[in-house]
Length: 163
Image 1: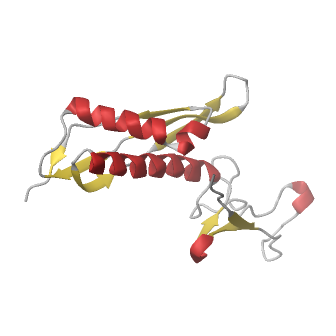
Image 2: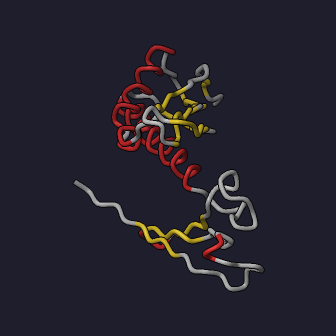
């Protein structure tokens, strides 16, 4: 099996006015590094920890989870569409995650809704074939398979590219 590593770095920011770690008044801003040198500013969600203790312009763990599930689904979908002979020209998604109470009473992302809009070049799949490609991608997505909450796909009508 493969291994996937990341690096997180946080330190107490003495420049933050009124910072007091033990009182909970500290910045949650941190950085996340990935292989290849890609870095991402991160923070707690402003809906969980209010600014200035969270950083609005940074990615939060919940957003990254939603994006990760959507990215995984898209990559599998593109592969299965290619093998089925459908030329994808564009794939756009605006996924949404909903936080709520899990079955066991804990709080977590209870649902992720994917809303892919796909443009095909040449022949586009029928709605039934499109649904089957999404079902296959969902079943193969290791991120979706790792989650306790539900991941669903809302698929709009097929759009063919104008050549």
